[in-house]
Length: 421
Image 1 (tube, rainbow, N blue to C red):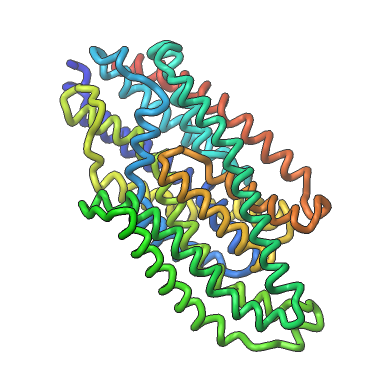
Image 2 (image 1 turned 180 degrees about the vertical axis):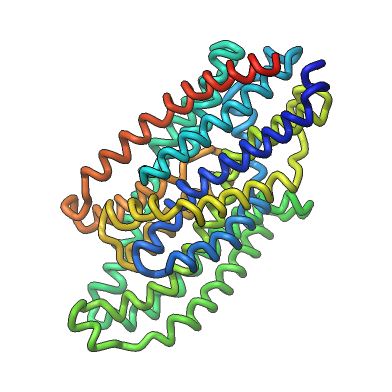
């Protein structure tokens, strides 16, 4: 308790710096994954992607980010064994933030699309092993998280595969693809608006102290989906048949229909990313803040300050602006060739998977989901459409992330303990 009283302000300052560094890494890596499909498909420019991220990443983090943050903080380790030594937990949270941030910076500079969720959970486990003991790790929760890493890409890939096959059957393999594209496009855009707004209705409004019943939530989500579909239709109906472009690529005019549709999926993906992955950066920060603010009490529940959510959103956007382009190239261009229609299917599938995960509080990886969705799009054209060497390198980088985060967290934990202890 004396250490908390003596160095409390320093701990909060370090937590803010490390948390900002960590969320910067999330933006440079994970958010770059999320926006890479839109940029890689040529639907949006890099500047447009950044503008979209600034708006919708903030909204996702602030409106729907609180629930998953609680899961990251309390679902992986049990701090009850160090209630009389809260400074140990502070060292651990700080070490986890810094270790994850360093690894994400390295991976982003190399263009490796690693998992920020892997990184922070690996760091937390590493700290818990040396700082509290193996018994403090909730192995059952960890197994559930590991299972989610397997399930996430499978679900994302399956949904994207089905979406691609549906566009092929309803649009591309018909006598008049452009006409059918304009006919069915509002339905796909409705799905974007419906799923994104539904997760916000279910739990995101907790921060605004508004409660809706399940029926009311579905009604509002349906209304929002219809509004987005109508807005999308106003853009799509202006697309004309370009015979010149069609000579070089038979579906050039049809792909133009999907270009404005990708604006909607890019917005939804940024929102979904903010709601789920902001927890990786601000969870440990919130833990440090609550311990210091309570005078050293390791509380089971604490109010998440609004400014922490804002800080998380700011850091993520900053990371995308400064270093996100390298990972965007990997996810958007190197796995498989993306067109606006394929990119739309991948992003919609990933958004659906992420918001469902955010709704249930499961800390899934946006990287796993989106790579799975892009693979699903590629598999719809056959295995030959996928660069398997790139996929293998991505999988290796995922495997390295866990031990890298754990080892660095151990070293930083002992360093902090030596400095303040």
